[in-house]
Length: 638
Image (cartoon, rainbow, N blue to C red; front, side, top):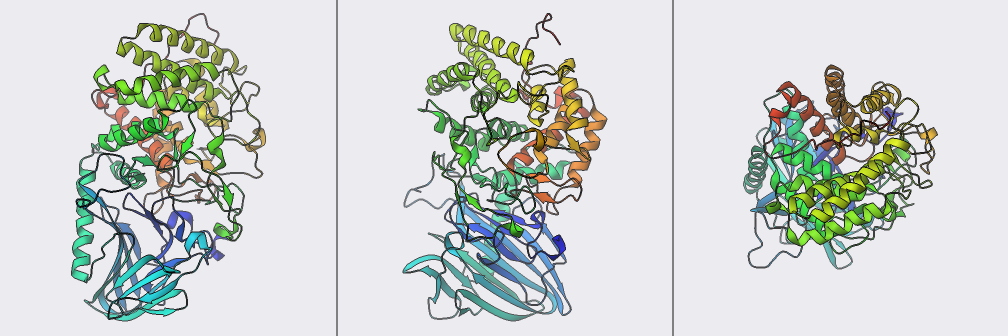
């Protein structure tokens, strides 16, 4: 079926970003996903969800399978090499980034401290014919608002190299090129036979974006952008190790998924790529989840990207401030209401419907939110001087809410749409909220809160250990089942119990042996979990990387290393990861690229590298990546 599908495999897409918008490029040279004016805006190209929902191709006229693709090393610039019977050519695609330009008028989007660089709001595509002669074609057919609206094209200027795509009288974007553009209905087209040594460009610009006017200018601005990415990645602290390339690409991908004006991290760049081929598990992931915050800070602080970590931390604390009820997720501008709707006019990726925008999980009750918020603050804060006094009332409120509500059922870390349960991982994260709150209170010299919160943490800890275990001493998904759940791999990673505790070892090994398919980890067994959906799902990439970290923690280092090597072999041709992997075919499933997958990769790889380098000695100074485990009552049953 996959060979007959008109849709490229999810893993074959290239990911572009300027930290304000994203684009996904198929191997054929089609831009098949792009939204304006920001990452979660309505699409202008959405062919990855319906072949008629908008596309923008630049490539040889009669060849659609390239000879090779790569990122220019250390950058987000995508290079595609084409071989045809007549010759060879190279296409480079990049979303331009340039020097900060908002000098005469303040940006109306930036909430964080402005950086030295900003998105130029230009998608640039350049072509160089290396030898022979190749017939090249440009075809740009937008379909606005998720394919619901078709625009009209109009030439601007005196020649054929400038055009605007309009909806009514409103300009949506502009094309600038040294090719001659013509129009066929909603499509702008250019064709040229390129000879050896010839070079052409096209630039799609929007808002106040200023496109290049010549190939020389385009070439200069492309490499100014690659200089930005080189400078950024060079600030990182990467170990000299055979897995370094995976860490660097994961860091670049995470940077590309951060919406720079607010510091928010997208869970993924896309919406409704299916978790099950042809199935209904299709969600919009272009939002920021609080659950990502701890893992984001772990990853970025570990690799030395403190500025991005701090920006995301301040985004999270900004949305939390002034709210009694934390949501599990927010819009990348801090929006609270993310109403879900289905787009029935779109067929879905390879026929997988429904296509959804918005995400109904925003209104769910998930008790992990307080723990991930407090753990984020704890990771961010190394001394009282680092604890913002303005944030303290908000933190007090959130710890108190966690203590008030930890006994209630919730929807769990995986946002199941079935009945609320007493999910064990949710209780563990409530313990994290009380535990980290107590440590922060001690740091602040607030003895009363420290004492009260430590007492509450001990109560939660005892309850989990009394009710969350089966007869084997294995932690289970919730209090009324013996089913396993991969979220329980977080128990040693969050310090709930020390790695050498028999219950931790039993849980990690049970998940490794019983909740896996060909060694890759499922979130849970769907037949044992009422998650509100039919059908199966693939193995979750984040859970498999969590298992690498957990196996390392309990001393199963060689098993962890073998699993890590296996997982890294499943990386896409461009070293990207979707949300899930089909363990039988290696096919990537779900939204792409997935921040959680890359965050877990960083944590897993660094666990093993630290082990190779002698354990704690490799941890960055002042950073507690492995919080102290809870003190275990020796009389507590195991």
